[in-house]
Length: 273
Image (cartoon, rainbow, N blue to C red; front, side, top):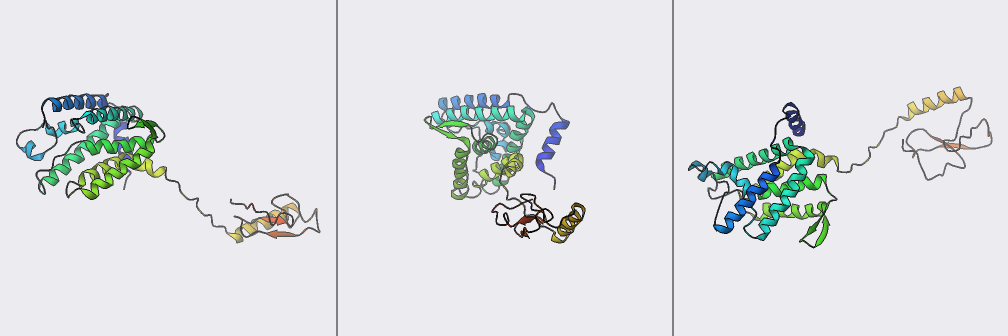
């Protein structure tokens, strides 16, 4: 199976003009307008609903991305915060990749809305988890950037990402089916774009090298014949030809076939390559 990120990069390479420059700004402005309308008209709703779409409200296929987190001051702050995150990712990725990220997450959300309609027609979908998952993407690329949590406490993005992850887990566990699938779909969109980068940052244990002692001993004997000595210390370089009274031993804990004189056989530092 091909890496999805390679397919995305190939698509963007073949279509260099793809993308909406300044998309993060347009989304923020649209969300700001929706937030103001929510203050003026309580109950103002742009969320995705397949039932509403089937009744002619086609704009909901797009307008759900403009739904603010809430009609309170917290909703306005979230608009500014996610505009900062979105514009930063847009600069880092390029407008093409950022636009594709938004479009794919919109498509996944719409497909979820179509699927859940037959299970629960009352489910309405907004962009909350899309933006929360976009926060994960920001934390992957800029983990040490600091923000003021609750406008007071300076904290790094990677630590806020843990809190964000807790929100996702709580939503999946506590929400009823099929509403608990909404954060799952948002995570799928994040992994599609950032899964490879995330895996590459996980520390891996060094691979254990298997030593072929027969081959190594043959190499040592060959070198010995050419150098006119039988044993040579791998630390100090002394040989049994120069120091015939010196005792030499081979270490089984070193990677390879290394010889040590009696002064260095108990050296705690072993060869690893």
